[in-house]
Image (cartoon, rainbow, N blue to C red; front, side):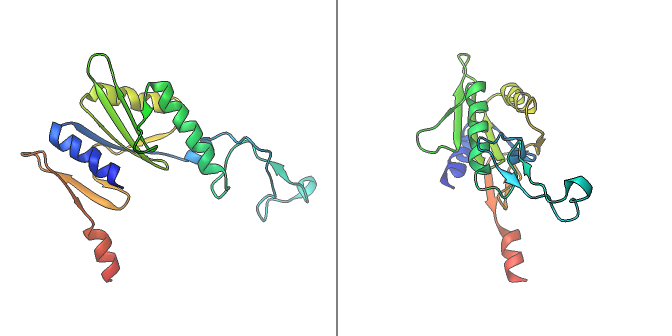
Length: 171
């Protein structure tokens, strides 16, 4: 998406930090609003459980409304932290503190890129997320949505490459 290119261009131009994270089991963390019943998986039906259905207490992968449920949850968490969705893209959130610290987050389902001028604010944001989610912190962005990113240590230039994807296509 163009929002990713914009955020990384901003980080390159201003010399800001970049970070890449993933929320583990994102959909399972989201509450479910509707009453949904499922049959147990094969092999689980035994004894007095045979023929029963189960009411879900949370979202599951594969459930139609799981993406929406997670989106509502993560949007509420972003707002709780003080972030606001941008007008250009609902998947981008931004904040600026009174002291001038900035943090911008781009989300694609449960994968996130963070860009900002304050490592302390970035760490505070990750700790905030860890209160409710299991978060994998991959550090400075290297891979996101199948694209390899690298940053020149001298110039700060950020380069994107899809050679791994092309290699797989040519096999």
